[in-house]
Picture: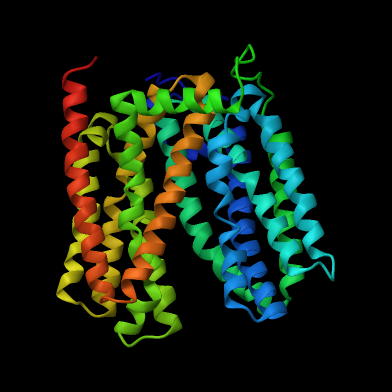
Length: 411
């Protein structure tokens, strides 16, 4: 992998987080990331509450909440290649501006609940091409070890933003109302668009000539690239393991109930699933050498899942939170998988590859939450976690063996 830095950064061989934030373009992307994540979570929570208040229907409220997630699958599969065919900065800015308009319409009094859900669904459709473009442009801005630090910052920000954004959504709705909360979301997209437009440089599209065929042909080519290569396929599957070890987050409510806790414990359990990674990601990316990160990727993935099996001993609230946090620490293997993935994907397919990988993560987490929740209705939540984690550990063992064979016997 190229170890030179770009954008005026220092040499990447001994890069620090201070060096990273001295890169003007990365600062702009980070500001965009912070505002977008907070705004997205705030909007989903605010709209779900608004729909429930208007209809008193738990089903419609759940649909409103799901409308902030489902479009990621469609957008990730079909629209992510847009960020390869057109300049990525312009794709991000346009996606943000469209979302400003759509969310602003939601603020208008009297908009029917069904229309609000459709507007959120449509607005979220623009998130996958935006995120694919952002993920694909980061390697152009910072390279080598600077890129690793950058991904650690982005992932840490995302994890913190999810928790804070959801909490801020509840607080904003409680004190300001749902519509002002949605207006705040529109502002976050405007800030993001300004940060990207004036904080990053214009770059040409990665694809110099228009590809032959339509979206389906393009999608087939993307699948062939990602899943036809044993190394890329293995790295993607390492990333998708999150669908199994994130199950505790999805069944935090029944778990808290089984531990004789209330809403506070639910929040603490969810936060604990993110807390370990928030502290471990920066340290892992900063102090562990690249070669060692790759060697540790498989064992850490196994440990991420295997640690959760300790829930079988039925620890109390504190013990459960400690187990979740430690599992999150081992989840830093995702940094190694991400870096290796970027190094193996050609620039002209980078956005599409990220879009496919992200779509799988969203589907995996969604299925994990749904199936885990359904199982927790019939079995003890701890047993559901143990089964999911055990399956994840076995899959991680198989992926580790495949990865090592692929490196030992390159095609």
